[in-house]
Picture 1 (tube, rainbow, N blue to C red):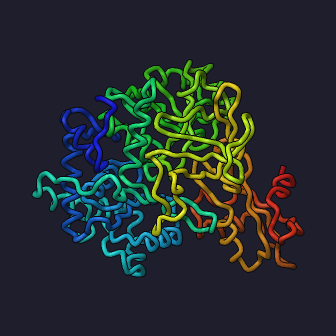
Picture 2 (cartoon, helix red, strand yellow):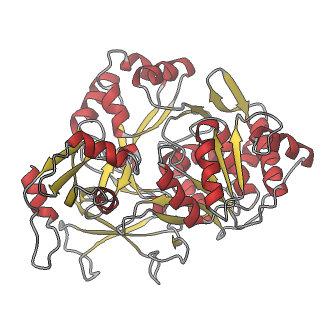
Picture 3 (cartoon, one colour):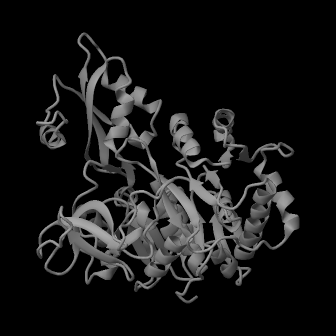
Length: 508
């Protein structure tokens, strides 16, 4: 297929791929879904959702693992003119409550395991009227399969919505302590797919088998992986959860050619003796969402003969901004150069361009940039289209970018954003916690993990395990502290704010 992509609705990519009706679109366990079958399922689900009374622009939450139901629900929501709200399947009830109520979602697609929590929240949240359960007993009002069956009679469904209409609302942690919904229109998602399609060698080609093990509720898995499969009419291998041994076996079994991955995957694979054999079919290996340790990059090159090409991006930029595929060489610790169609500059605190070689905040401009944060589109690009990422980088003498700091205090766990304020707010509700500060610490598998430094109420005997268990009641697992230190006092600056810089020095 050519790299030109249709404008309008992202779901039209599925319709275009279905011009090759018998070509496999999705591989899952022992099943194959062709592009014509996927297009028909998307039509049926879109008609079913419309039949529920969901109107154009209303939100449909999707809380599913990497199974065929996710792409069907996702592309169907878009075809019906709805806004897809992918939700982390590890969310606690509190986190789900916030995302569902904040987005005003009228419908939600979930699994049998998540059904009880979703239905309980539907009784609390006035806007949430429909909970659709994959695998529910046939004949129940909540059955996703029944909705599909009812929609089949509608036949072909034309997509609703245009380039600037909101397509996806993705929740990413905010400095206020509560996740914020990044507003991504069809235009931004299609633009980034077109931008990355210009990279040579191609990230995804029409004859590729692409590994889809990254969570599809994350922008990296959703757009750079699943979106690219649809854009090029390739074949996606869906894997529900990452297990290094089992995933390598699936790569070998299905002759995977393109791997869209994250550092923990390569860390785990680099320790296995059969990684070289499994990578025999691989054409291209990518890593993103967090820095890849230089030793792991070198180990993968030595063992498999493959460079692992790194990229950098954000939820707010749909997501890819840079790639080492754009560089002359895949250097360790580099994020490469901007992909075609992305303008990038480094600026100081006054917004002025920094001197050559100096670090500066990464500011970007391009058709892939989001509208802003839900619901007022706040915090988006400025009047000239520039979006300040909050990340600091420098350009080396060869013209390649290197990140030196990320989003100020953000902790990046396996590519997922964790803002300390959100964790601190939870821990401060414990009656024995007097004061707390959260920082990120290096972790060999996840890049970083969360560490809590706690001042206890006098006389308390709270243990680290109890702190971790308490946080797990309200936070997804990746946000919970993996390390806890009890201290007599926290360092404070002149304004009374905890000095995170001093905390990092203390921790180191």
